[in-house]
Image (cartoon, rainbow, N blue to C red; front, top):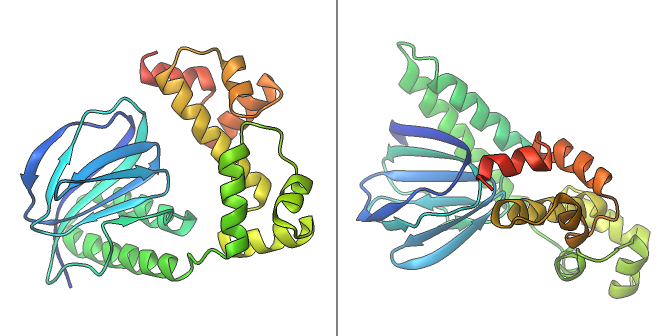
Length: 246
């Protein structure tokens, strides 16, 4: 059973802040909406990428170094009768339903009321149930895993459904149907997500021009890249770079 909620923060377009090595006395859930973060938990290094969650039960030894990548992440600290039945890193688990619940939690936290703790506890319990449901639904078929691996290796190149069909020895239509069934995304939308995330990293960590970045991550047209980037992130590439100080 969830007890008192002791802390909540939402860090939008913020670089990773340093946390000295220490033992925590509470449960912590951190949701990485976008970006990349590095944690040391019990002196083991863990890397989070967009869509990942990290769970730390009481007694965990945590450490975090200063980072330079812009992140969008939320953290909730709370007490509970017993540790949650989650792994330390929960990969690719943040879907639209979970984002809506996190938004509701943030709204409730910002609007204090006499029954605030009760509202927060109920919302957090629903968030935990949603994470559990997402884990049950997160099975990726061998074919989808093969497509993801192919995209990871070739996203900087021009990729068509026919290329994926030839690489997997399945028809393009079958690849598309199987991928969407197990990931919830079309192959093209997944490919665009991979390219946009790669562009974020280059915008944050390099001084390359937007045109060069567009080419480097697989977009043929810089204007199209800018439109897609703004549609996916809410910011133009140059505005996103402004946040990183480059």
